[in-house]
Amino acid sequence: MALSALSLEQAPPISVPLRFFLTAPLFAFLAAGVLLFAGPDAFASRWTPALLAATHLLTLGFLTMCMIGALSQMLPVLAGAVITKPRRGAWLTHAPLVAGTLLLAGGFLFGWRAGLLAALPMLAWSLLSFALVAGLALRRSPARSATIAAMKLALIALAATVLLGLLLGLAVTGHAALPLPRLTNLHAGWGLLGWVGLLTFGVAYQVVPMFQLTTAYPSPMQRLLAPLLAAALLAWSLASWLDVEGGKWMGLLILAPGFAAFATITLQRQHKRRRRVPDVTLQFWRIGMFSVLGAVALWSLAQFEPAWVAAASYPLALGVLLIAGFALSVINGMLYKIVPFVVWLHVQSRNPPRGSVPNMKEIIGDAAARRQAWAHDAALALLLCATLRPDLFLYPAAVASGLSSMLLEWNLFGAWRAYRRFAR
Image (spheres, one colour):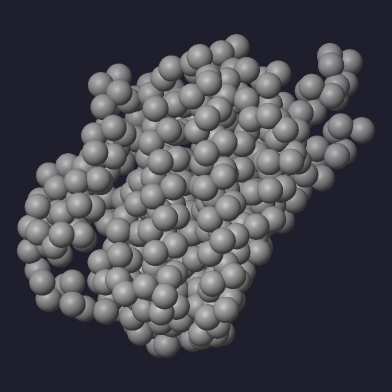
């Protein structure tokens, strides 16, 4: 997509997306701190209090925080879907998301039932209201594209994830008798495959060709992949809830091949891109796509090896590949393009031709971004090793994760400082 096709004049105030982007790395740092505090016992199983707390600090505090910030910027610019009173809406989403995530993580970590119950309405208000407002803005938009369709499906998946999370919260606190493992799998599936996965597809159709100078994704893929996977996710959910064999085959025949196809085509497009200049964003995206392929292979093989599923390391490795490997890598990569672009856009709007408009490389330098990328890659490798030997690898994994988070925070705060400097 060319810049001329973007509705740049409809961009929200810079404080709207940046409040989410600047907050997110702090939650990733807290997640690393929880793992460091808990030690190897955190990886004893997928159900340990420390792992539940760290997982939700990452998925709500980092992933969802970044994705809402990105959508707040991209909906009006890419889709022409204007959210009225964006500053007020940002506060009403951001504040309860921060408070609710902290209460939820504290409730898991310390067995604090009151904290869990207090977190539920805050998170429900923040996320469901955002999904509703963003969905209505997309519905009013006259634009039609595969990206917009994928965004709509991702918002539906977000609502489903939140509703399933509310049921889980009620079950964990003893207010509802529900099958926890089955409900947890559905909650994770809609969150990672639906909310994160479908939104990544939609955004990738635009930002990969535009920022990474690749050819466009195949048209049939853009039209069909997200709707097909959303339908398959729904069918898998029904089969899983009813505990019938169809869920496994829905995953093997549609979900796993669909995600593998997206990762493979993305890697192929990046390999053949027009410009061969090294770019840290490519490093993040490649790690993310290889993590998707690894998760697909691991999950597919486990369907025929029941002993794998019973092993404590299996769900841990799958979670590390999907959350730290896929989602965190891709979002880190997008931040290094979206944040400099947002700063450049707002400096340009404040300083017409006579003003000083920075180059995007001046906003976040390549060397600083690459240092954080190497810290992230080291953390991912150590986390994967920790799923097998937490006694040896969990502490260094937590330290590397915390370092990566702080470097990201420093780089994003540097972009904010650059905006203030150039805007003056």
